[in-house]
Image (tube, rainbow over all chains, first blue to last red; front, side, top):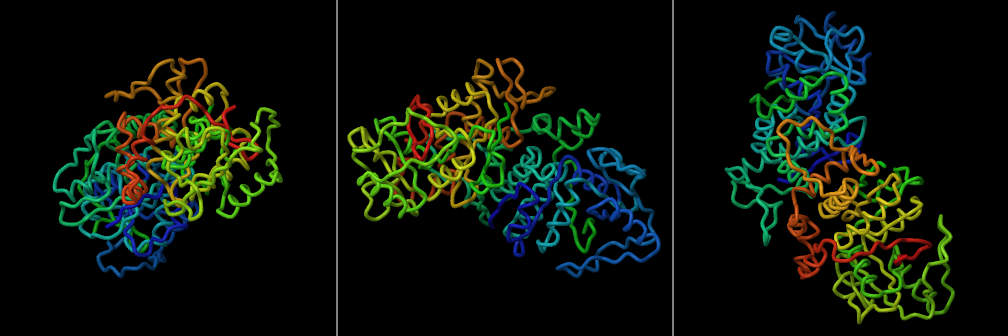
Length: 284
Length: 284
């Protein structure tokens, strides 16, 4: 299996994804919020591209006219989302959309707030990237640092070529998402090797990193996948540092979301790999 | 000054470079070969986009009909390249172009081979990226690991916004060029701080990496610049490892160019910063 990384949503359109598994990452904060909400008992998250689309989805869910999107899969296990309480969440410029009950902070999505409810969410980068990727990729997972290992396990079990998609910030590269891509790849390599790769520097290298021969399968990393993997090794356990290093992390700090950064940096807090099918993100 | 990184030549067209200093990196092997040739007394290197253009430049130089390209600068210091012996160098698919006297190995460009001669060079990625960047950027330097510190000093002295351009491999991201971009940025930060940044991981980070406040100027890193800088910190002194990790490095190994990898990984071997002006790369 070949693992590649897409650094910006724009690359989704430019890349052949029809035969690949995709994972979308927007660790500050959309995919972290989605994972947190589902971990706390939210039935499903419906990602909307725009504020008006989010309002429309809420309306249609309430009056029973909501229709699922077509998808590659026909999946009878998609949770029933009708007749449930609906939360409207999202941000623009990092701050809660006026009139919405919730913003994009994962800390707003605790058990009391979300259990057995349906969340309609729209964010600047993350939900758009999810929708864009869903149009192209036959299987789409939601990843974050919070559920890196669980997402890695799904990918490893599928043994298909995989695209790790970074939502980025305002269409540009973001340090935090590429770091998360590296962490995800680190977890996949760990599964492939049956152990944590040391990543120890060898003074006389005579081997190639991208191919791992001693696992049940083989993992080939693209150069970009290898680069973000090395980046993850540099940050090691101190993933919070990457958030402080990043432009978007700094912006969130200025907006007063320091606690969000600390939450989003908690690696492997949740053992779940949400999937996107027919317009809905849920736990299969 | 803001430092950003371009990962692929395609981004040169998509990026505003008119007000920025640019450095082009193709460490395996074009810019390493150019720097090596100039260090060994080559008067000038003329980068050609195609094989036929390279042959035409050689012909025009020989019969005196060669014309310099227009450029932002009018520079009377450009070395006289007429009446000199001409070398025709270049590769396609990593191997010497049939009929050319030289390939793209820096080890072919020793003193005996190049002293006081003019080299016309065409390569798959590097010379094309240089020509593309030269159309957009007002000041263009040639960088590699071999001359990272000297190139960093030029950039630091100019105190302008800077684009570090990775030539990549066949239009795609390459690990070795992004690593070299990180090494270059590491050297610039060192100059800005008056010391080598520790890059030590802080368990309780409360600072932002991209802004450095204690130097004579301020260096702001984009997220991508910060990422490749962290990548360079991971590889540390073992830059050769990145070549072994990379697809293109592996290809060159298969082609028998292991000695080239060792040469190109020698950081700060040469104290010179070649500039591109009016179609010619030389030492100002």
